[in-house]
Image (cartoon, rainbow, N blue to C red):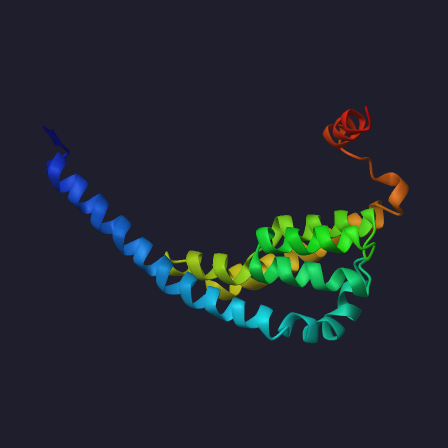
Length: 169
């Protein structure tokens, strides 16, 4: 069977080789990044950056305690960031408004290094991807920080309300 002057075997071969090449490029980027990120966690580099970023983040409604979970989410991604965020909420370090603003920022700009490198390997423009996401996330969060004035404006998701009700019964 032939499609557009190519056999199925040649199409499969081309697809597999192309996919393998892309996966190899991703591994070559993600593996070193994971090692660097583990060093960053171990040596608490993010903690050292918090005072530098705190004044910038204050303009979008985030206090000093919100800086750490945001930087972790930007650097390590939503998985690590959410773990730190849960700890921050449980310890009372961030309020509902700050959590909402952090999540809005991370929707547009999480795992910025990993994602940007991946898109760069398949032809994306690195500076546009990197700075575009950062600036876009900052502006988006700034807009929402003006809309969400206080904690009372944030509704708890109905699924959480149901879980709390079933736990109390």
